[in-house]
Length: 228
Image 1 (spheres, rainbow, N blue to C red):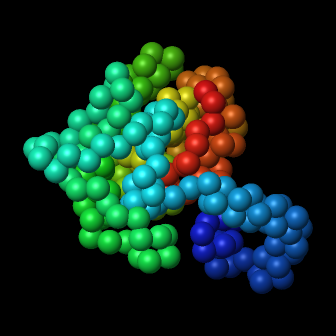
Image 2 (cartoon, rainbow, N blue to C red):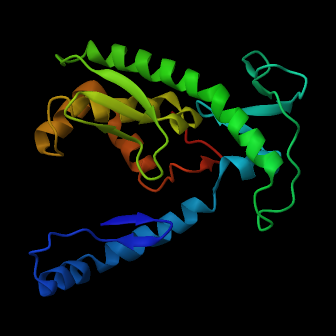
């Protein structure tokens, strides 16, 4: 059972009798309603990157608010850590309201932001993975970026860790958990007790981050950030 903007999505084996599926839904009815309500409340505190920029709101970089400065004369964007600002090489997007649709200027700003942050995301994830690797005996792996709409990360049989670049909007504690989660799959390609024990070995405080991300939409940016 998965909650998203589309509501409740249920995946079940084809051989499962409909009566058994109906019973499972009834048994978890309270959980479903609670999670749907929590998801709706959480989404009210998140915006798509283009909308965030159009509203002139700060961008959370590693959980800390960064003001966005637009300089069309720039050849490439950059991040000023001293002033906690992000400088984008494009014109400022106009705020025509969230219901008016995304404008080309908003799209340009959103693409410029992504182009600037993706290399930083990859470097951060690689460094985090190397730090965690010292805490457990893990096989060789490679780190890649993803733009998944509903997943923060994945690990396949080729030992490729794919991590959503939008994690750079979250605190380093959140990033550590997601990286640890996918690295644990290098040993356990499941979510068994042994898997979660490996996650805990890599990131002892993982549970708080796991719960925090449970109602976050990978396609959107949080308007505020939970404390580390």
